Image 1 (cartoon, rainbow, N blue to C red):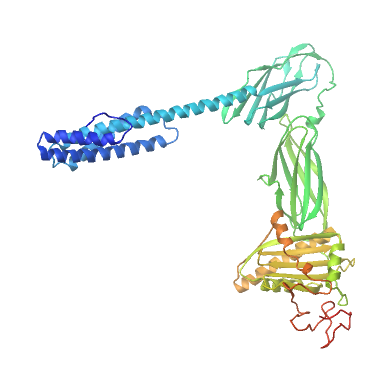
Image 2 (cartoon, helix red, strand yellow):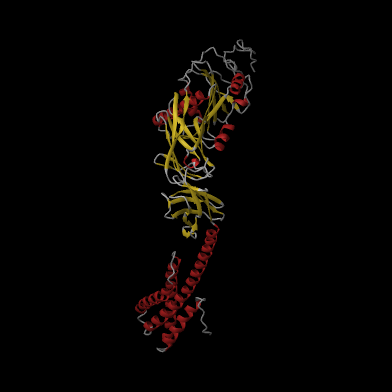
Length: 584
């Protein structure tokens, strides 16, 4: 039998245990040789298992490089196992010697194997670190610092030194620190400036301002630039800002320094959207230098409006919207959704903008206030007003302002009960019910109302759609003015929410309304909800759609009321005596 040992074959540890146990037991007789071989096998297996397992756990820990301590740890574990083995197998005479030899030899072999694995792992990790550092160093070497100075310099005034950091690499350069160490003939009040981040393939801008003390050819000084790449610190070689002619008097600027301290250019506009007042703001930085830490603070009557959300979803800190930095010749835009809580003839939305210029000075400006008019129309609808299905469809198309709010509802109530609640709420207003439609399976309901405003006599159309398929409630409105539309949608939305919650509390139902603002989800729900298109102008609907309300009841034999005007039909009549509609 070959005694060739391999550090990479764990079976050899077992063979070593068998050989040592057999040979030492043989000195006490053949029966002891068999027992010694078995003891050696058990001890070798236990030692290899414990030593390799415990050491492998150590090397799996992050940043563990202790290859030199592996052998000593393995030897210590082997001695502990040997002592325990000697106690357990004390009935066999050579057991202590077998335990010491087998456990220490196997432990050292296992430790050597683990050490070799650890050394390879450390070498791979070191190679990976070196490769990453090489990539970072190449990125750092590619970073360019461009300096632009107006000429000539002038005393008695500030002279901007524009600094551009160009990052052509694929890595982000951030926390850029720029320090100017000026000559004693030049005063620089704020020599330290920073740039938060320069994305890959982009540039960042800032400036320092110098004040020559006397006319002459003056060496401004040196510029020191340092930054982080992947949390590693890098710095450029000190750069000479240069020697420039200095003259006496006010400057005629080459670089437009007025833009450096001028306020942001702010454009804003509002629109009515999905029952919200949507304020769109654009902040433009017309200068060539970066403007830092731009924040917005809105000022409005919180009894009339609440902010529902922002798009994009910038972070909020201390009740201010954090827009971040705006690079030179760039702009940032944001849309703010205001949810009307009460109707108001006239209310203003104001906004204060805080920012730091390229010198780090804190500045502020204000948006021109935007007046908002949200009216909740007072309805007064005469009972003599006759609206049939065809007229209703034409009216919806003719009214200039149409929009809807869609709510996701989580409730145990079915569509019929929810529709009943909505109709009870709507009937509190002076508005006329026109049609209630439903699908044959009873999972989708749609009820239509018509009304007129009391003050101006404008037409208003309201539709409530409830769908069990999409678990949603849609409130659709069509009006003559945008302000009355958003006011109506907000008012009816709040009323439905209050009505459903009151029913929930009395009937122990679980209901929750949440407005859907995701455009794709919202549109997919609305496209599936219009049952009126399944009916012709005379009120005849497809087989999948039924008319169900307290004015019209349809059955398979004959209707008892006119589907157009709702007048009672005399039994056996083929035409309505009021409007002349043919009765099917």
